Image 1 (tube, rainbow, N blue to C red):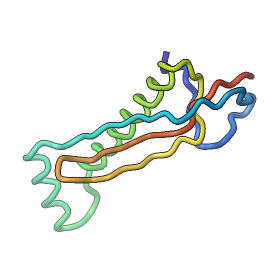
Image 2 (image 1 turned 90 degrees about the horizontal axis):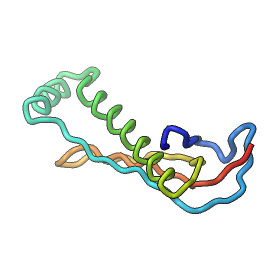
Image 3 (image 1 turned 90 degrees about the vertical axis):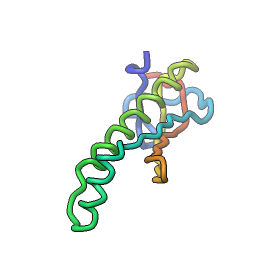
Length: 108
């Protein structure tokens, strides 16, 4: 069901109009790398350049946050999430990503 939820960063979806705004919906995830990988990425940070391991971690976290956002919207029978945004933070345990927006029912 979540694959049918439309997600947009805008207030409107072309060809649709919002018939009801129901509130906020969130998709959260926290991911961490293993100790060996983290050490390797830290060494790369010292010499500079692209840190591929962390880029992959961010991509995976972002994708998972969007999937969880769509699932949460589908669970409350919303068919769209408008004005989707990301919030992220890094800490000792890993990177956290939150995808959030307003869940709506839209008609074409």
